[in-house]
Length: 376
Image (cartoon, rainbow, N blue to C red):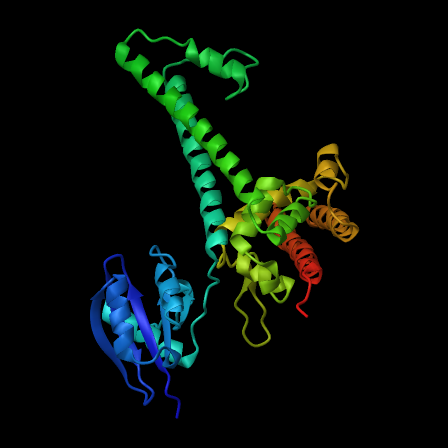
């Protein structure tokens, strides 16, 4: 009989509900402990030797601190996807105790799906990339507040002043209101727009520094992905930060499923019914790939900018990128000719683009492994 004990943890900011699935089949609650390292260490010491414990908890806002602590203690731990935890239709009561017991029971049955836990370097790069995304969204909100304030008071830019360009900003700085309150409001909105721009510049500079300090393999994949049309440096960094090692996906369809761009399906018997994409994956990766897919509505060409990005790539990577241009543009034109909605067409192109991203990542990571000298 197996002597393994499966421990389910329902983790919150201040407390952790604990349950254990015993080897004899019993699942029992062990109560609630404070979410503190010393409390966790004391609990695991009471449960038994590290080799006999299998711990799991749901991914959430508490991050991977608990995971790293348990790994340092020599305890096997899985961080599971919350939306993939089995739920019975008749479950109408949800408490921390019941959630912990369910995790322990499902972990013992093998019904949970573990998520990829990034190492410290990947997590730091991902946090930085997502901070820039948050800054871009804040900039959009600040610009909307300023432009709508001016529009509400009938202040329109002169003809030929492109929004948010130099001439536009010069015009905004010369706008004057009779009431001091409105002038103060305008100055505050303008200050927020300028602050957002400075914040984005500062974060992009930090991303460049982080990429320069990244391992050689990571830099190679980032450079290689830029050979694809529509994937510039920030897009490539985002893809690598969200994926980690591309080789952890055994095939391109697995990567497509991870991004949530595969079709949902409800088929039964002889009837086959497919619907919208699942969106059950990494939303950040899906967003950046769909944005890149719009570039393939244009005919294949190597522009001066793209040629500069490809100058350091090997021949195999350039061949994959050139094949992607022909295949994806052909796919786009064929689906548009059939009368498909352009947003749906671009999503289909993005799904196939992930296949080329996978091929380039595999090519570069395996090449990096071959370049590493083997120990005698």
